[in-house]
Image 1: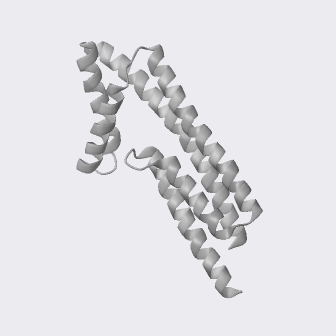
Image 2 (image 1 turned 90 degrees about the vertical axis):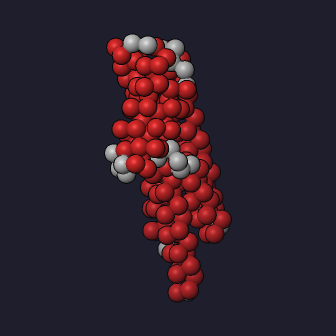
Image 3 (image 1 turned 30 degrees about the horizontal axis):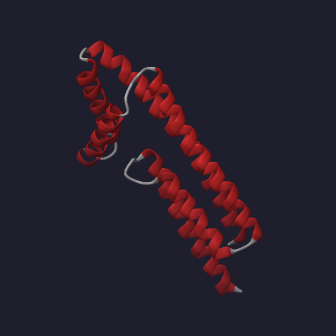
Amino acid sequence: TTLERMDAALLGAIAIVVAVVGVCGVVLPVLPGSLLVGLGLALWSVGHRSPLDWLLFGVGVVVLVIGSLTGALLTTRHLAERRIPHWPVVVGLVAGVAGMVLLPGPGLLIGFVAGLFVAELVRVRTPRAALSTSWVALKSVGLGMLIELACDLTVTAALVVRVLTVA
């Protein structure tokens, strides 16, 4: 009926919005990215209850977990290979959040890079070494984010296609 289609459309819209916010959360460290994408997928699956939707949920969760773990493990491995501890990256993330508040948009990247470099400068004591290790850390974090982002985008795209074919 029309009411059921409207309910499915509303549920689908909410699920997609939650998933898209999750995709943004992969880039913005203040939001739990993959978790929100999974929540959007769960909202749709619980509300729609078809076997295909549960299959989408199961496969989607596996893809999200693989993306999150792979990104984190590769980042950790690259940092460990160069003997770069995690705390400079954490300092960079905190500085990135502060930069985002002070300068919306580019402040996140500027703050992250500046915070990471300053933390590495404190740790290794020379600008040249700090620049080198900061670059490695930046590439490692970026690669991890790209992997997680690709998985989150894939799951979100599948959710959008499913919602549009049902609602």
